[in-house]
Length: 380
Image 1 (tube, rainbow, N blue to C red):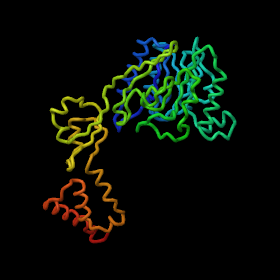
Image 2 (spheres, rainbow, N blue to C red):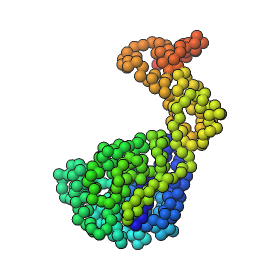
Image 3 (cartoon, one colour):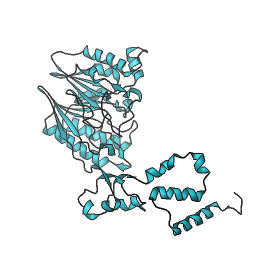
């Protein structure tokens, strides 16, 4: 059989305040096309369909339309699970009759032990779960960590194995040894601690969700599909897409997705970045994280850069502001004991790497004098 493996759609997500709705629609259309061109037997969505447990109405409508197109229009079976960003309770609404159209959505731990039976494949679907859910299911309060929980879960799953079939697991967790990026949740919250991938050696393939890079885990029979879009600057160099899984003979094929607006990281001087000869070679409508190498203050840097790069998601200085914040390691009390003019002068020199001019010093003294004058007739 042939499946398409995707995950971490995060419908409703924003990128540093920028709306990603059009990007998410575009990515979905590419996923849909790949599924049809590759003539897959089903689409796997390994968790985090939404970006938050209480999604906005627009996000609900968008995801619903995507599922309808795949399942009702294209007649493709869907094998989906809830992730740590989803509300299992809300996502599960309607699941009892979804199966009538071969839309399998598992949101509860107990459902993981009921595989979807296909002609030559068993699809086990393990949604994100908290430790207390494993304690309740197994009626065992001694379960304190994921290792214990997963050992019990895998043992029960294996009891349902049909030895004549391919065993596929869909799951949403952090596999021990995986590489992470800034856009993923902290990994030691609830059920997102590291799980030894060796526990899953008896499965023929483990379709994972949670980490956003397809190369986060390099094993022959367990992979993260990665997210369809780049959700942080730390993902700028990642290739986004989906996996096509062939079960007999087993084969993995990565299919890339091209974004409307890509994410880039630029490190250069202000003059170079605003030089037409430099920026005309770039897709300036893309998302950019910019690091300035200038050692002097650039007035209105963000506003001026946005005239060329309208979708800046981060602006930092390689030197200057970041260094100024350290303030020589002085303690708060030592700083408060200094004269305001001395503090201002030291701060400016730290940021701009040059002293105040005589005119700037006059302006600064006048401003400080005015700020220190009592208000309301001399009463503070």
